[in-house]
Length: 247
Image (tube, rainbow, N blue to C red; front, side, top):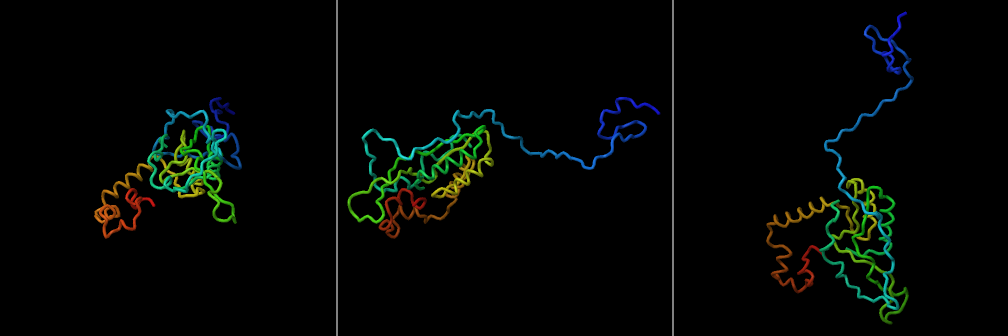
């Protein structure tokens, strides 16, 4: 019986290759575990080395009632909708390149959902709306008419069309934060949409292309500006500002 060299026993779980013959050192197992193949991607993963996360990464608590000075009563404002009519001119773009009224309940839904689903190790979120400041008055049910304006029932913050409500950034992709942001958008009291900076730029580009490629001279704007068929008799002054884009 010839003695096998030691280098042939380097792998004791399979066949040892011998220049002359094969020797089965161990019986094959009843089951085998196969390693999964690695998935190949066309593009390399994004680099987040230049992303700096803030110290506090969750959404802060917005007070239900705004803070006034001592012995100052909250003002009673008129029920004007001019603060929610028209487009948003300031907070309509994302800072960290990633219409209606919002009440305290909707704000808490946003804060609780985002803070629960968000991974604070690599993600942060910030508010892009003002705190609750507009008092909304309401009289009790069954009360007679008259008697002056009712007392303050709750506070709200106006949100115009195109306003960014919250912004989520960090070392994440859009596909990672879309699921829980979409669940929040569905629960809003007005139509909301989850967008990225690229989507905002595409929407603005598409709107500009539609406006430039419009060959119909008789548009709503042309009719209002030229008072065609006396249409300014039944149109409101706001139609001369927003035309048919916003109600």
